Amino acid sequence: MADETYNGHANWATWNVNMYAGSDEAAYIYIRDLGPTPYDAEGAESITRELWPTGTPDMGSAREYESVDWDGVAECYNELANVDTATA
Image 1 (cartoon, rainbow, N blue to C red):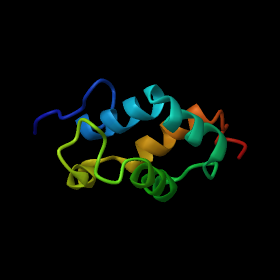
Image 2: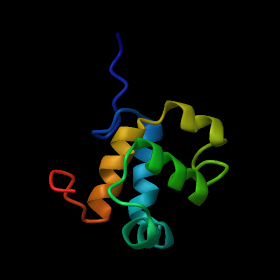
Image 3: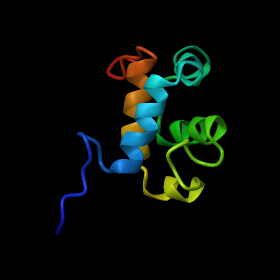
Image 4: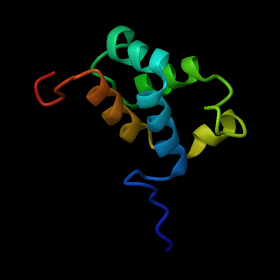
């Protein structure tokens, strides 16, 4: 079985969503200040699809969201929003 992890993330698509969440200023502010916290996988996917309905700028289409590890994205979004999920 091939290792498909990418830069410490489950795969490229998960890394790419998290990269844009942390580097796109408008997305970062939205995730940090306006999104539902704490994030779970469902909330992270919903916010991501709202921010980038056709996929991130690097994705060919929103179909690439099918391989995203939404739990991993939720973890990233909680870090961006400074949410301590142990006490939330």
